[in-house]
Length: 480
Image 1 (cartoon, rainbow, N blue to C red):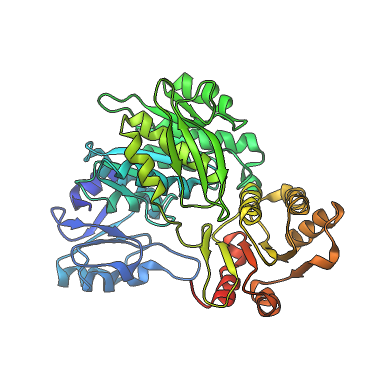
Image 2: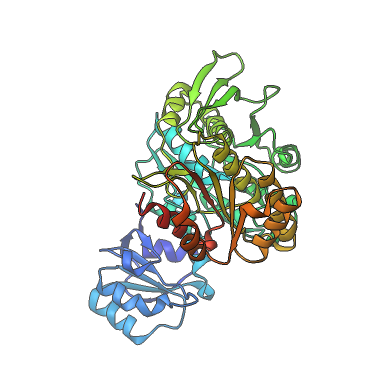
């Protein structure tokens, strides 16, 4: 965990020391005052509903040795600092986000022993992050992004929570707008980065898939090699923007490119992919000049093999043992609300993938639903997708059309315009209107549909996080 002097933070960020001693040290930094413990730092943010600056004085009284304000200091804060011996800084231009990034960058620079692996992509980056942590962790001490702390604040928190004895940091890097990933990568300075794919997530903000590809390629600017390892980018060969990113961004920057998934030129690829009646994939892992190895994943869906290959590509780049990594991947378990298969006594089997969604991830989840053995009905409960902008109507319609091509017995749609577009897409392509139900909210859907589900049904629950479809899963299962 981070341990720094206030003077070092002032030097790195340009913050103004309002109270206390510059020689004061702190260990750990948080943006939630409820997480503050002894000798930690609290960075106050003005939120839409809550102003963190109002909690700065209490943070000092709770043991914080440093608080960082993003507004005019309240006299109570300065008084609390005098009474506790803590320090008070004011972030330059009251920009707490930039303050966090600069502080974390300074901490990263002070810990060159860390080998950072960054992972980004439109779909699958969290699963790939978990796979990277498991695969690399089979032979090295690893610290990985907790939960979904992958944005301009989450990445600095990840770096500053990492133990100093960690050998490899696996850092998930998300973004919503152009320029964000450039700032994140400059802070974390990964030696190896993985781009899982270029999809349609955030297309409403970035305008086109090419815009998304350019935004993902910003990670290249932060890549920094270490002794014995050149900066390396791992790409999926089958992604249609693979060559674009490699030739337009990575190669001109002197970054090595490794691809995965293709027998033609990739460092690792899979053959003989199959799934069992639970949707769990098996495959033969292939590497040029190496003996084929058998792999099996405990996460459902063929798409998981692509995420596993991305992780194994990074293992290859790092020169770590592949057999240990493959065994570790086989022992993984799903994270909450990400293709998490749950069933309680007397309930249907539920594939809870309600954490987030994009058109391609919904298609992959539908494939999982239809690959599982089912003695009852296959039920797809799908909520609308956020951040699709002008492409929303078209992409939601394509999702509906994809459902029509699958072996789904009942389609439950949740939302407003997006749900209606999926309904039109499905029924236009021949899905019977008698097998579609549309509801405005997850609770409305749960109240009507949950009572009619049966124990031998298999139910997929999938939507963007804002739809709140975890409520549907909870209503059906009681608990998981």
